[in-house]
Length: 283
Length: 325
Image 1 (spheres, each protein chain N blue to C red):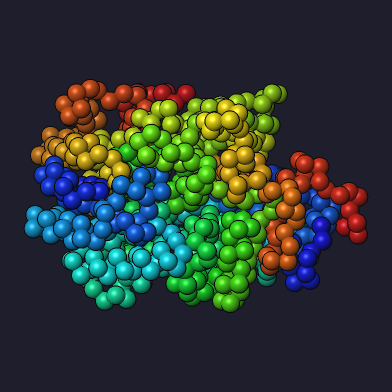
Image 2: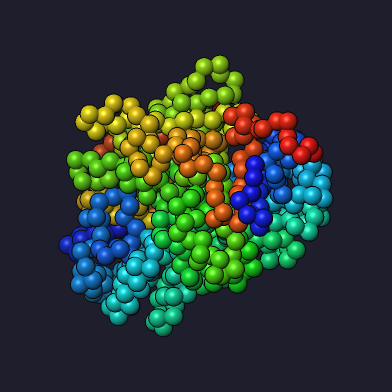
């Protein structure tokens, strides 16, 4: 994977229990490894997993910990998770927060860089940019970057963020749509009761879904994929765990020089067989 | 005592809701300040004159009016929101509901005393975020509707220490997605307008999800969406009022600014009767669900069926041990 500009950073998003190998990281040109999860607290790493990730990252890669919206119990314990990160990871360690409570907790960890996650940033996805007052709050709290919901939000807010000294991060190839409390991966086995009442076996690590809409528009087939109805969604609508995503339009290709960082989904590249092995440049 | 907060979309419904027992009314005003994404534009008051009238009627009867300025939007939306806030403050509005945290400061800068409620779209799921929002100047926070009763009690205890109030959603609770983090509302072309004029969000529309991977060899197809079963969305939290009251929750909100006032008024009266039963000492740990069911049957003429409880702890009590498996 080639960076568009020397300044652009490539990061690799890893899922719990599915860390990329060093050749995979090298093949993607990664300078940073994301662990944790943006949307489900059950996918937060244990202390051991954090250590394993740091060991994999070595001195060459920095670690980012993704933290999702948190339940009361998880929020109460997030301090120890941040402490583990501070102790384990190197100087470039950072936290992506998708819960304002995590930003509150980060006040006690000045060494950890703060990044606004896309679950919150997506609230402003169709607003033509962020309210300046919100950027005041972010800058005042020492936030360094914002993860954007998708390319349209990048286009509408990049220059505004840059003017405030905030970096723009973009995930590829999945645009964020929603977080649901009815976990898609568990639902098929257990009907549609609320996830917070039942345990799961992290089915999302293996199971994913594709959404099709019943369409009642005359002249259109009765069951059609979302992209045929919606000009903005050109790829498939996908469900993984408790989040929905829109796949990037394949025609759009790899993001250009716009984002300061591109976050690549490791599982996507692995499952789609897109790793260009043998990796050029070796390990 | 928990205050019952009811939605309002027409001046002529104001007295009906107050007489039914609403201690607080909330409404949006046409013009872009309030969020009405899943429902029809008729879910809002037609203009600021109507708001002025609502405030006048309500304040003379001791009922507080809250203006919804809870949409996320660009500069134009923000301009409308601040214009509406200025006007509403001039009319003596009691409170303003916002979702964008930066709007708290901007409304405070208008220099008039007003109770600012941070709505459910802000995403308060825990005590830490509540403290963060309190630090920004919110007077009350509406908790995310997915929370269980135990979490609500814990957050409400934190709220007391932080000096702010907690509000929960109590009726018409069923939304699959976490409101604060959902963009599906905005995919207008994926939504569908039904005969009543309402717009169904993509999540409400009937759709299929085909699952791949996991233990199953072949893809599984799951029907989802509820446009053919809208009643599933109208879940109820009546019996949970007993525990919410003990937790110190300040207000219980009925969702649905688009819903007919006659339905909302019946819901308000039902909640009022249940709270009155609690206050009289008639409700206790052993009968709080039975009392709720009895009152509901009396109000609606039918018992509540399975799957109607939003709070799963209550549903579990109703169904007995092992119901989830």
